[in-house]
Every structure is written in structure tokens, then in C-alpha cells.
Length: 156
Image (tube, rainbow, N blue to C red; front, top):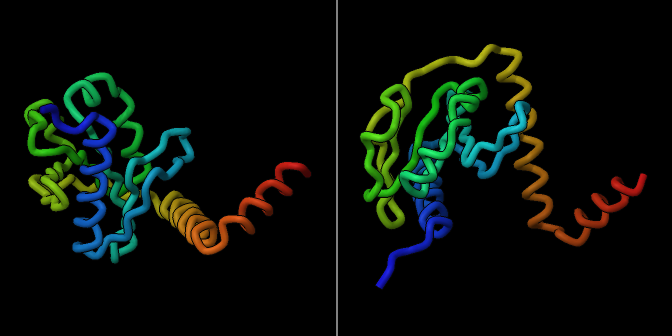
């Protein structure tokens, strides 16, 4: 019997990590496009207004072939990796926080160092975060209406 595929593992880690975020009072948003063209697996807004970027890794190969993770640092006050219990944690850099997930639970094993965002960047990111979250909520509430509006906007 084989375990879950890499996409399934990533989805399980992401779900458990999002639950952890909620338990800590953070508001997680998945697949957030960043101004530098990257996409954060999870961008969470903390109660203090700070942002946490969480990069989910499905396995060692996913980490070893991904050299772009340092580019997330400029768009968050703290950067974490989230992995499952089978991931060899010694592969991950010590200067990034560590979240480990098992089933539907996750724990912070290493806090991320703080690197506060500049106020202007924080404000811009907060506006983008709010607009993305509101747009996704609107799409859940009225998928046909949102699709129709988006289609008409593309036609103009």
C-alpha cells in the first residue's frame, strides 16, 4: 500500500496548517498572488496586522527544486515552511520558521524570525489581501454573478 501522492500530501499539510493559523487567531488565505509574480501557498494576517507567509512543501524534492522561497520574505513579517512528519527537517534553513503537520493537526516547532514590512508595503498588501478575500467570498456566494461580471470586464 502506498501513501498519498505529493499533491495530496501538500493539500493535507495546507489544511492542517490553515487550521493551526485559525487556532492562533491568524486569518489564512490560500494561493495569494504577490506583487513580485510569486504566489504564497498561505498568507495569514495576524491580529497585530502582521503578515505570515507559509510555504508548504510536499516532500524533499519539492524543497530541493524550489529556489524561489527567499522571494516571499519581502512580503511578510515572518516566513515559515510547513511540512509533514515524514519530511527531513534538517533540509530546511534555520532562518525560517517550521510548522509540522500530522493528519489534521499542526504545530509550530520553530518560530520564524521577525523581519517587519515597511509601512507602505504592509498597507498595499493589506488592501490586496482584503480584496482577494472579499472576491473569493463573493464568488462562493454568487458564482454565476461573479463569473458574468468577470466575463464582461474581460470583453471591454
